[in-house]
Length: 406
Image (tube, rainbow, N blue to C red; front, top):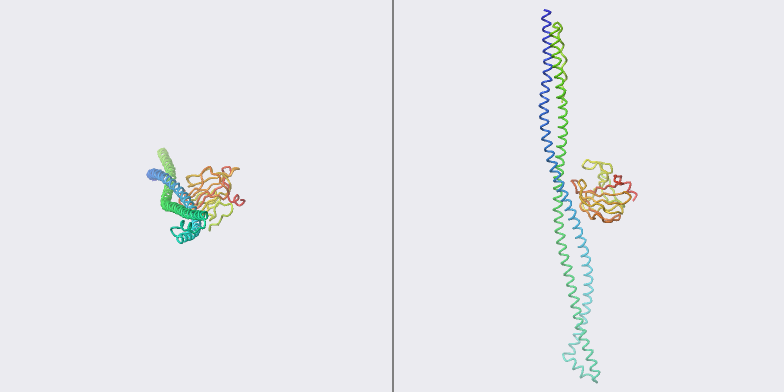
């Protein structure tokens, strides 16, 4: 009986070791299958992320082109409206001249009417009548000379009036033609600007959608990468556990063979591994008056950290220079849209980004308060706003400290 009980104990110990080895082996196969699936999904997600990244780059370039065209169109419209205002002023001045000329014309017509009545009274034989009515030939010649002078004066007045009227008509016609051309140009530019704004909104929405998809795939890729790394570590631990169980099984078998009266003790099974309202800002020295959407060091709408000020304002609002300086950059920049940079000297530079249109070019000298740009939302989606930075020796500083001293 004792030998039978010892045999049963040895068999039980060997069975426990086999089971202990089988569990890690089964877990290892499951982990390998999960790892293979995760790696295949990771490859697919990475490929899709790269494809979306290419689409996002192309959409960003298209958005830049539309932003630049929108900026040029907005600037041209402003220039056309300025020329129209000049033409209106010129037309008002011309109308004043016309009123004065009409007054003079009335006086001239009355004088001419009097001369015509006098000539009609004298009759068609005025020279002969005057000659016969005089007591002397000399007096008659003098009267005839005056008569000829009056006739010439009549003709000169008529010619002068006709010339003035012709000049007035020609000037009015020229201004009217210029106004019609400018009105047509303004209508065309407004239509083009509206179309560009629609295109820009569509491209911005496309960029925003692609950015969301890209970030989603990027997050998924990171999660899958973490899963793959975890599964690899799990697989390594399971394989190590299986190797230990196999080694222990062999050691127990050897001990059982050499000491049949002492049943081996199975090692315990390894544990399984489980799976606030915006603040109004602005005033003298500020680039713009509006709502402070993000302050220095705050969070921008896209989640990034603000190194300046984001000031919300209506589209087209004028952005002004905060100090005297020279424009050193005026172009589109990725992440900033249409941006203008002014060098103020002493290491200070100011940046004005997200504009709808740039009203200055690189190399232009500007003074404090000069118009630099108009508010927009170029460079990406979001409400119209100005992103303003102040840098000293290339490093961002809090603009409010500097602006409140100006």
